[in-house]
Image 1 (cartoon, rainbow, N blue to C red):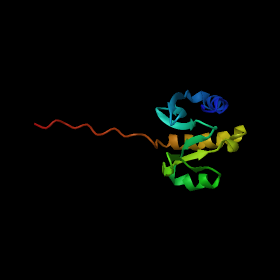
Image 2: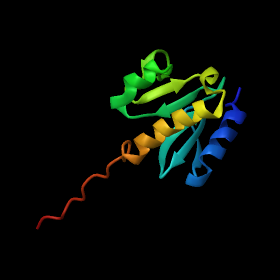
Image 3: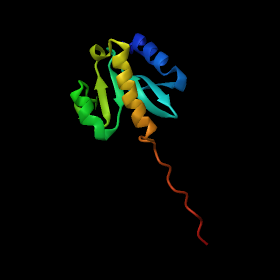
Image 4: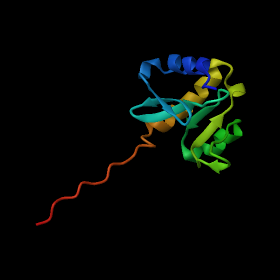
Length: 122
């Protein structure tokens, strides 16, 4: 069973001005901007994995999302949430979750920092 192609098409349309790169990830299709994941349409039923600001995590969980898990019951931690397909029926709902991911992205969060270069000693 693959990811929900219709949901992926809706995301492509919504993010078209940002030129996302699509990558197979987490058993689904992730949408990347500036080499950082915004969302991922997961395999088997159309759930959406969303990367959000950890400090707003509880707010998003109150809105109907749930904590993302990897494997059997292992939480991915604050800032990783899953939104079920039923909560993504209309474009306004999808836009809400994409905006949450874009807000996190705009703050530069989730960027892997490069280790400082070592200067040679003599």
